Length: 165
Image (cartoon, rainbow, N blue to C red; front, side):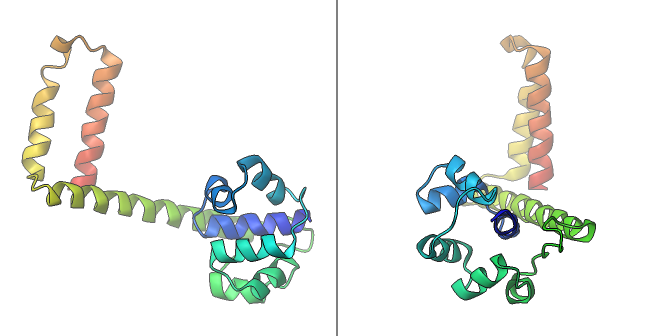
């Protein structure tokens, strides 16, 4: 069951989902889902069907993958398989890290697009908006903010500037 849990974790991460996301979709606690990924809970057919739906994977392919048949899902979802020992090998770990990196990059692009869309839909002139924020910076010490708060404000402006330009 531990091997199945490890494979389930690879699917979840490759789909860009957190344990919390999957647990909520299943209607269980994060702890209960974590126990599934650790191999401490036996999965029945109903639960497997729910997971297949959440991950948008054919139930037969999911069952095959969890039972060691790597081709069924690896080629469709491009998941790294599990080595013979039951734990990921170095190449598989590198692939998994790449999946996580690509997910983080796509999430950053989505945040950037959402922020720009929000400002543009409210007819906010982005360069003027950034200028106003920079102008506020000069008055922060008069507003009784400490150095840490001022530093955080400045970092926030830099992040916004990076996202919006």
